Length: 237
Image (cartoon, rainbow, N blue to C red):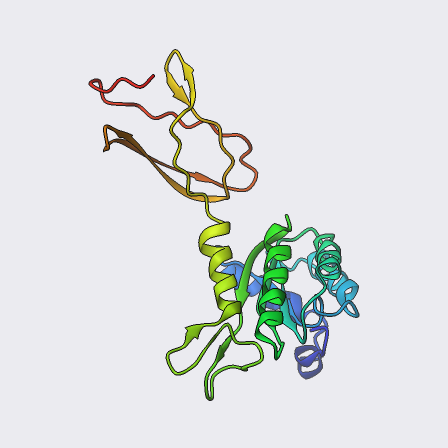
């Protein structure tokens, strides 16, 4: 809508954009409604305008839950500039989703570095709640080889894809094996920091799982204490 006013022009109703959000929310109160536009993080030309648009929708009663920023980068992005644009978008007071992320570079290593830079900046930003990649497979009739994270007839991950996999499945996951905690009257205590998400803790005694506990870490929770009760025949300490 930064790039046109189709519905306003066709209906002659200046409120049509806000009313569409309201009608959808009336029909499905649980649905999450987003604004989505391009040219707001890969370029700074329209970033402030997007903030104003989000504020305008909210001021006119549109139940906007978050804003999406398409992330089509025509070359390796500058992490400092990307962060500054996300900072500006965050002033709208809404969660941000970075969508359609692509980094176009002919050199595979430069492309991989670009994806890693963009992913790290977005993941670490407190206002960003999600990141979606675009169709990034460099095979015939499906995707642009300049943005591909996988390529070849077998669609195998290239260096950019391997960087993505390393971040998502290793660097941004908490997988710990703890053996020596602080001895307390009630048993052993372990302090750790973890990424947001769902956890399963397994306590092993003589190589066998003696107790299992699941819990979740969600944004805004703050410090959490998780107590794990052990069977009566297991002494920990």
